[in-house]
Amino acid sequence: MTTTESRLPEERLLEVSDLEKHFPIKQGFLKREVGRILAVDGVNFHINDGETLGLVGESGCGKTTTARCILRAVDPTNGEILFRTREDEVVDIAMLKGAELKKIRSDIQMIFQDPFSSLNPRMTLLDTIGEPLLLNNIGSKHDREERVAELLEMVGLRPEYMRRFPHAFSGGQRQRIGIARALALNPKLVVADEPVSALDVSVQAQVLNLLADLQGELGLTYLFVAHDLSVVKHISDRVAVMYVGKLVEMAPTDELFSTPKHPYTAALLSAVPEPDPRAKSERIILQGEVANPADPPSGCYFHPRCSYATEQCKLETPVLQEITDGHYVSCHRAEELILEGVLAE
Image (tube, rainbow, N blue to C red):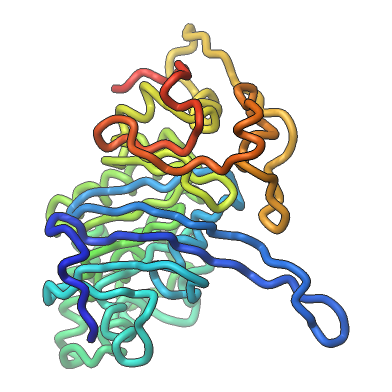
């Protein structure tokens, strides 16, 4: 396995550099390529060991595609995905193939969005949660049963449930089963793709608290993909905001919520509901439609909807740059704009 140790700082578990994923558009009888959808278009971020990075944005902005590239559920078009394995080797996931790729999968697992369709209705909990152990030839049948019982207790379910099928459980319980399955191989990184969006609000809080407890207990690192900023605020150490395949802002959670530097981030924050009914907030209504990733505008992709756009924004593509310690923004006017955020808890 090829290592790139010197290119990943010791405190970092994952570093994504210039990641791209383009999907071809084909037409005609010969299926000729007539264009490309720029689903992920040059994304850069890192995740430190033991932290949670929230990845947010509107539907279709490329959040899930970015996560799937890291998991190698889809192959990236270009870019580098450096990851520190449990053997303390640093590998480029984007370049792995065959046995090397299979070996890395036990270090990175996924919690899916829909707790109903992500579980096989014909498999018991023992088969579902124990399947990763079986596929990786870990332990005997008895060992796998003991491990499944341990995992069920860990996520707040009774071990005797392992003989039951998914239809016997509620949505929140099914998501707990999905979490148990993701933890079966003791992964270092867990990619959670909208893990609470299909659940009731009260159940969302229970699952989020469970994820936080498991992180403290097992030393997990999360990439938390979501569109609900109130959920992201509750669980994330840092937040990265995407718009049409590009990263537009990334900062520590409290700083991003209180002092956003990109107009798109400020617009998203204005939609976060206030728990106080007496509080008055000014909702920022963005004009126009989200840019077409198959035919994005010139310059900054956000400029057609931005009330602060200048001629420079229309002509020059902004670069993601660090304006304060740990606060990265891709906006020509980031240092001069004073945008309204929401109060940190």
